[in-house]
Length: 389
Image 1 (cartoon, rainbow, N blue to C red):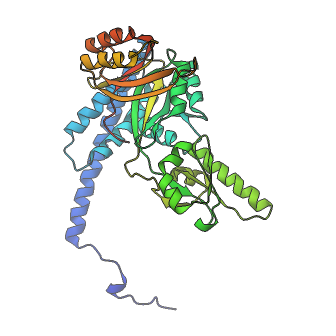
Image 2: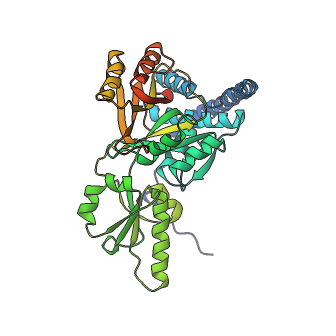
Image 3: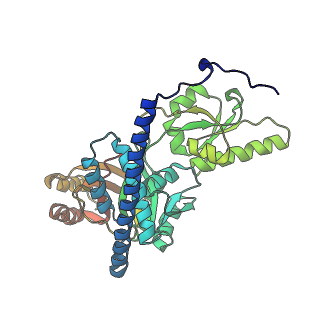
């Protein structure tokens, strides 16, 4: 009978001393006890959530309340003394709230797809894994489905810290203002990756969303000056298009040379390798998203109001509107414009102002500013986003 080879102590990993084993067992026992208490408390909390859901449905109160979410997160983060970092605490409570939504009433969230897009990423981080998601292929489609009531809330990008305002979202507000409202906002730290299944020197065509190209302009000019840049409806669609293009090339015996710029998540979902990560020109690349709804958000104490207006046809009309806000002591955090679509060289202006439409000062300023406008629409008042997802 063959004897197993002898092993020396050096061939084995470090072993625990009896004292270390006892200490670990004691710590693990305490963790097990805490887990049992946590589960009990979570289910006790869930029972209260069910009761809240019954009351909300009976009174037709929105299930998702961004002002309440902001209050809960602020409170728990203020009470946390570590060692868990604030971002971890927020992620835990976001998921806890997601489970609460499912208990109160199932929610459907629309986003600019396909899956793997940055809108998909921010939607899942904002609403968690216990709600249903609808892949809507265009920003206009998100507005339409919210307006029809086919989804409860929609996520749409409104501006990027390096690329500026999102044209499609502003244009959608021109069509749907008054039928949907801005219910909240979220900020996402965006990192772009070059995705391909061929060596970098074989890449001839790169697909992505125009805004993504603008955010990687200098990197692309340096690394791939000869590559053709092809616009796509979304970064995830770009990944799918690159894969389809490479399959066609292979079917005719040509060498694949299509790549895409998108999220690493999209590459994993659809099957493109990450060749280069974090290729955005500026590392502090934040995209702000609006949460749109048919509901109106209540005051949280730290709010914004978004307004869309066309000025009266007279010299200095825009200045007069801005003077009204200045005189009221209202700070503007964003201003943009789009062609009105009515007459050439007429523009619709979009502003974000600090405060809630129900605040007396804001209400008075809106009334006074309206006197200098052909039309003025409050797109929504909502809690100001203070954290980056």
